[in-house]
Length: 241
Image (cartoon, rainbow, N blue to C red; front, side, top):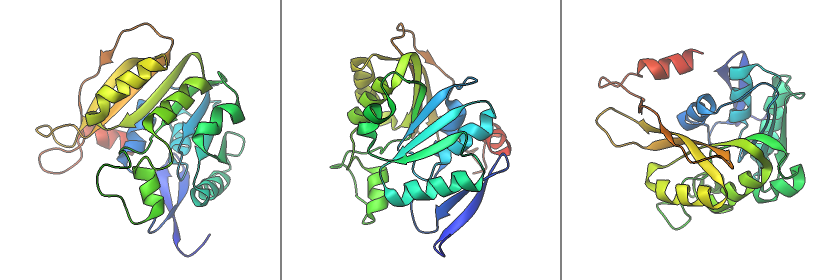
């Protein structure tokens, strides 16, 4: 491990290697991992896995006989994620591949997975301030893949009745719904995340079923902070796990 890296404890007896000054995982990855429906013996793909946080959390949360493949285009993060998998002795459950997610269906096989999960870049390349760091820019802006690329690849990877889960921005919900419908991923569960009870939502969690019938269940809001700035009980319970 290089001097610019650190090892963080993520609970469940698991650790992750991260770069001190690079892109680190945030609460969105944690919330998505807890939101995603996972069943025993599921085959899972995480598109844009970054440092591998979502595969590690999914394994820690479910402890089941699941296999997870993480796809990451940035070589430095793919290699770091591979070392985190090895650090935790999870080579039999998690594999990390350095590849473009748009190529994942051809590499891994179409209609071959039960679950696809993704925490993709949130903003279009032309929107907002782009980070001067290439690593952070690729993680936050659609420089190497678009929202449609992510959804299209996910639909191709999933078996019929397979599940797709994503965290994204509420402001892009109309576009998200349009693209999900285009690729026959039927929205089934939607939850909005609010920093405070009186503030607008800043994240959404959505889960779909490939080829499912229309019926969307809108879940109660998820509030992150109490008015005094401390985590709400629900968030505390997630982190206490």
